[in-house]
Structure formats: C-alpha cells, structure tokens
Length: 179
Ligand code: IMP
Ligand code: MG
Image 1: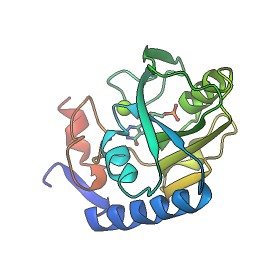
Image 2: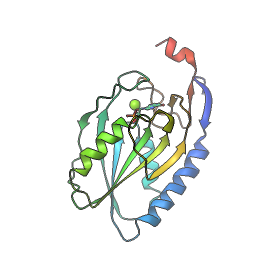
Image 3: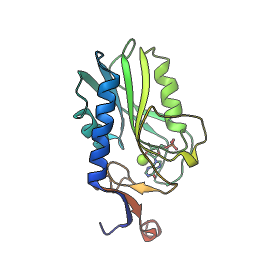
Image 4: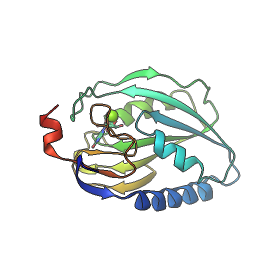
C-alpha cells in the first residue's frame, strides 16, 4: 500500500491471532452466553472477524465514543456519541476495542458500563501500546503489543481514512504533512 512506510501486521498475521483469541474466548466462556460490545468505528473489522471465531451463543451491540479529533494525539475528553441499545445487567460483557493507547477511552467506558451491573466485564483489544498509558488498565485479551507509533488499517484511521486497509502499518510522514 503506497501510503504506508512500513507494514507491522500482515492480513495473515492478524487472521491467525484473531483465530487464537476466538479460541481462547470460546474456552473461557464455556457454558455462558456472551454480550459483545464493539466500539465504533475502529473495532468494526476486528469485531466482525472475531465473533465468527467464537463458537458460543452470543449477542452483540455497538457503541461509539469520541476522544480524538482529526489528530494523532488524544484530548482526554470522552464523549458517548452512540450508546448500546441493550440493557447489560446480569450479562457477561466483553468490550471489543481496536487499540488501547493512553487508556483514557477504555477507562471511561469500563467505568460507565460497570455502573450498569453486568455479571462480568472484560476487555478484548486488538492492539496495545502500553508505553503511552496514562491510567492503569490492562485488557484481559490482547492481540498484539505494538511500539509507540501511530498505526492505521484494519479499522484504524488517520482523519477517517485508511480504515479499509487489510494490514496494519505506519503511514509515511508526508501523509501528515499534506494534511
Ligand atoms: P486512548 O484513549 O488514548 O487509549 O485512545 C484510544 C483510541 O484512540 C482508539 O480507540 C483509537 O480510535 C485511537 N488511537 C490511538 N492510537 C491510535 C493509532 O495508533 N492509530 C489510530 N488510532 C489510534
Ligand atoms: Mg480513531
């Protein structure tokens, strides 16, 4: 892909890891019914692939939050743009995220969802950038730990673009410069 300086994760690497995560979740939730909450928009491709690797009865819903503008740095302010439509009291909830960076978004979300009294609440993220963490939050399921670089593809965007790339990679610096 010509906008990328480097590919960090190929489609094959992503698919293999998603299969492993699905198998792990399937084992851990044996005998239970899951409620997956996907966080729009970034988690959409990951969630779509992951749910088909989970061999359990499940429901899913979607939530949209915003903590970023068209920028590569977080503002820290979290806003619920779209809430889930289902009640989650007594449900086994698994939040599916694209990436945990500072942790501010997920920290807010987990607090908000916990107050709705689910039976259990865990987090599955595709990517984790632990070096940038500002609040303590550790996902129960994590696809890949990545270095502190701004990545795009497989749902992740820069200014709403590149979400459709099948791989995950680092943009060329000139992409930012040309805005
Ligand atoms: P946090 O609140 O700093 O953990 O940010 C989480 C959100 O920021 C993610 O859901 C992404 O939408 C966005 N984000 C963080 N790092 C990246 C990145 O490297 N590429 C694209 N989006 C990112
Ligand atoms: Mg984003």
